Length: 226
Length: 107
Image (tube, rainbow over all chains, first blue to last red; front, side, top):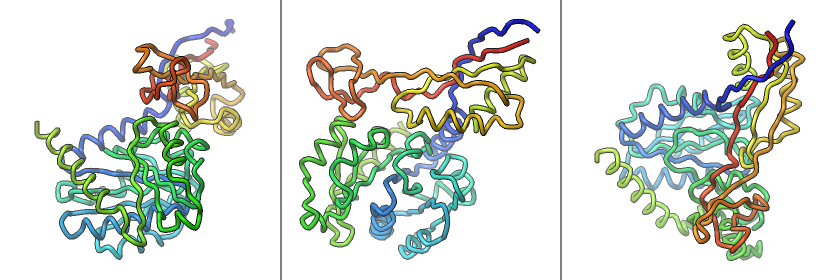
């Protein structure tokens, strides 16, 4: 047997997921649907925020959502109260969603009959950062109860996201949440990142966020038809 | 895991045995070196790659400083500022890699 030798093979390890995600992104754009994903730690308020957003968007737009959890259909049931079509993906032991899982979940939906599609990832601040889901916009949620230094502790997920949403603002005062410090920490790991502050309970900040989504949808459609 | 599948595919295509798999892992890739090393062994179990080694090259984060107009290393992944002038640096040039770069093979 000959001596071992080194051969160069340049291959992206996440390639399979990236290929699926890219194809999905193309399909989303052709269909004119704007896709937003949500990542955060468990309990940051993704489902509550999304239920609120879906309920308000539903008045004017065609919306749908996919939600990932290790087990149970609880989140899908909560989101379904918004009257929007909802699919639950149960991942079993997997700590994140992959593009192919989303692709399969939405297979029987007519994408061109939608304006907005939301993908709620499994509550996890680590692995979801590495998996492209074909989304146009990735939101990272941070609740005021988690502490201002979360961005510094999990820089990768904040760096992979496009926009930050600080949730549970109604609890900011009792938690002595330092908004300026949180903002500084977000800017430290992702300079230029836009931050929205919301309270699902009181409705604070949701209008501003919905306006932002409407702007992004319009821009995305302009870019596709141009 | 897709890394083991990728390496297997490549080895089968060339009709060779794999001694080690060389990969580059960016500090911003979200991958923990120690976790990857132990899961590699498990993923290789009962495959043609069983017994092969994983060689990991750490890839530091490099950002483009809009003020100095040059690429800079960042000293810490939780502080995206230019190491020279202190400007915020959102433009990541390097550090998100997760790629297989080479195979050490036996024909």
